Image (cartoon, rainbow, N blue to C red; front, side, top):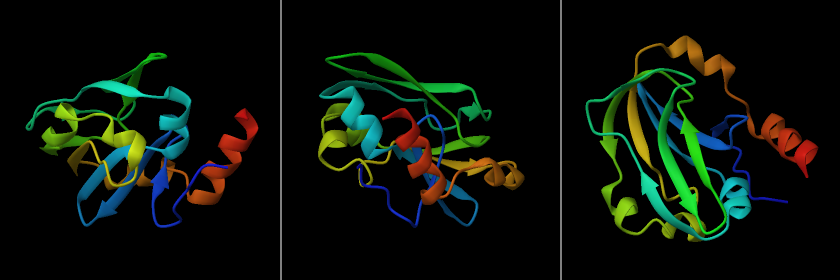
Length: 128
C-alpha cells in the first residue's frame, strides 16, 4: 500500500493538500507517482495565476503517461516550486516533500470536499 500521511488532505485525483492558515500546499501522492513511474517533465502555473477548483492547473509527464493536475481548491498561486520544474524526478523520491504549488485560498468552504487519509486510502484500495 502507498504511503498516505494522516496529517494531509487528499483529492480523488491523487493530489495531496496541506493547509496552513489561508495557504494550501499541493503535490501529488505516493500512489500517483508510483502509477506514473519515472517523472520526466512538469508544467506548473505562474505566481499570480488564479485557479478554480476542478480546473486543470498543470501537467505531470512520465515515461508512461502525461496527466493533468486539477486544482483541489480555488485561489491565487502564491508560490511555485521552481526547483521541481528543473528536477521533476524528485517527486518519485519524495512525493510529500516535493510540493508543486502553494495557493492563497479564496474559498475556505471548499476544504470540506477534500478526503482525509482514511477516505483516500479507501479510494486507492478500490482502484487497486
